[in-house]
Length: 224
Picture (cartoon, rainbow, N blue to C red):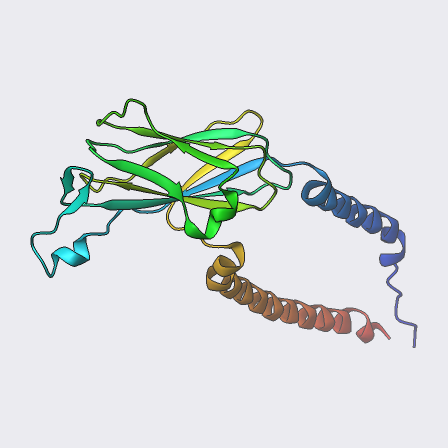
């Protein structure tokens, strides 16, 4: 009976595998921790006619602002997040309200009152009625991962608002829909997907190991 051949692949390949793993770890750490990434993400919610529920019960509803009566009041929310890993300096962005609007207004969301000294919302002076644009100024900086929201109110047609933002050396993304924190989105969508992938990988890995064990048995043990 002869001794089964010894497999000696791992030993010679160990330095190469170690170098590859080390390079991958260095690249990941450099990208996610060391490299500065300037990113800004803005979410634009759908425009809501907040008077619609009342009109289902009462046909004639009026809101009075000064001497003017409004029959419809719309609302839209814009959430701003520094999605990079370094602070952003002073920047501005515009919020366009398409259509004809006699009255419009913008303000910080109540939960973000702490930003009131850092966020200024301006509108045209003198006020224009067709396609007005609000300008939002953020200063002196927005820290990494900080988030705030502004809410716009306006009369007239319930049209989606538009956001325009270009900042030098900053990657800007504008998304439609309600903002949701990363972990909330992950728990709802990402975790089930990763769980499915992990389960599939475990099953596939078990099958591959069983196949390799059978191949090893047939190839080497039968040679004894």
